[in-house]
Length: 215
Image 1 (cartoon, rainbow, N blue to C red):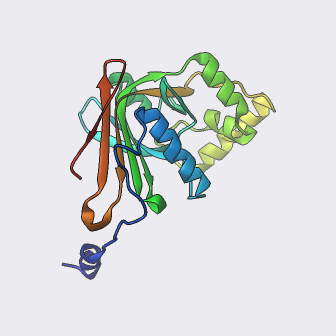
Image 2 (image 1 turned 120 degrees about the vertical axis):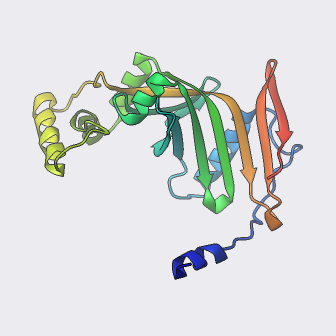
């Protein structure tokens, strides 16, 4: 075993910041998520809006990447991206995905699984218009997930579309929003001695069934 491997095996952390009980948690997982997200923002941890998105392609191989949450409500969790990217192609063939937030400093994880649908054109247009100009040009300049010979391609594309659209680039037809409609939520709070708190929410009639899972 290498020195690095032995060091990894020896890494330990005691989780003792907080607890998550059935009595203190919300009956609605969206409200619980909102509370934890607000607490992560208030704690000023790095990028509290970053989440891992997992998709599965037609070859049944999973892939993950980091995306940024841009909205949430009773309909689901929203992010925006290139529809022609690998994740877009995989979602077109298999509209099921999983999201994960990991707020390390708060010793918390939120996992969300469900089906994915595109947001409306109006929603995508409104968000695109709110982005900085460089980001709007970037949506045109980057053929996301495609092989390119060098960074010069991106720079040249950015210059091309900047000259073409000036200050008003429209939303590209290949770019827009996705919404994950939750079928299951899990909330994990680190606890001492690896006896972590883990609550799962699944649909139960008009509401949600809240259950404790062994960590």
